[in-house]
Image 1 (cartoon, rainbow, N blue to C red):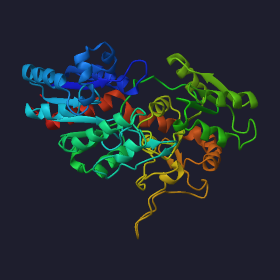
Image 2: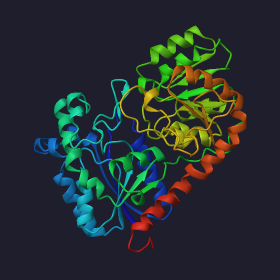
Image 3: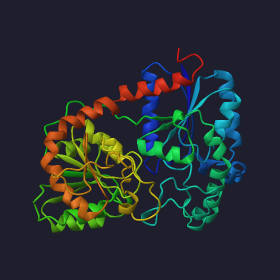
Image 4: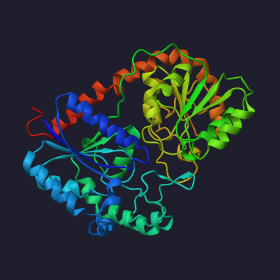
Length: 430
């Protein structure tokens, strides 16, 4: 099987989980015997481009002529079975889908964000969830609010690109949704079920989990949308030491807030940014990992790392978090507004089961999943969930590791991906 993997790499100055996932996926496919032809561009190339090439950059999200010429040559020479697209912006353009189809090559796209609809790709603006451009022929609100790179001009270009390429996206042969929430986003966009496959990313197996540690770990960017403020607000509602230790690892604009709370309380430790060895040590020392995003976080890798290490997760009921911990349930479309409102459970259908299963032993709004719990992104609700999570962590530790092995192990996700390719290849993958 011969696959072209197309991806516009994000700038190296901004660490990108998407770049890391693409690199890992190429390595995993190659190890599985798939011939991979990388078709890569990098946004780092822009600075060294000649003036003539830079002059064409404003239109490249719509149509990137050089990329189409290079791709056409690659497809003609190597006759691949499938083109697998990740990020097309800005140097590839969604036009690569049309180029591949012109050469009779089916296209798979992994959907890493919400950019079929949202110019920023995040469904998040000014500290709240925003879906103002959903259902519009042209995303005018994105222009008004400068959603793309803080520029009205660039936002207008991206909104126009999304409008121009609506038909392009709807011609993709198979979409890979990283979670059930992304699948819902694609259905809302008009993609039929038979062209959507839910296949998450995987991470390398860290090996047998260490014995369960104590307390909680937050590992991530210290920024408003990652919910560190929500977490600290919830944590302060408990007496110092009542829940065991809280370790916070990472860096970002809210670092001073974390440092001040760590100075006030003996049960909060700020670890700062960690290397891989530091991450492993922090996971080993903890019992529960926290995922407190206040936006529709697509697929927080830290959750998969936690499951691989046998650590259950307490997270907010937003984006891909419920799917990752096995607690996904039908929810209302997010709409625009505060995260706590935008994560409301869908009402039960008449005569049908309730959307959220609860028990007398669980606080209102807390949903238990196969490998953790989700709760509305509200400080009071999160505060009520913390004692439940620490008390029940040991009971879910084995289930967390088992969920990783069944769903997120590289061998599992790579086989699933090859099966997707084979379903589109005339040769059936031979």
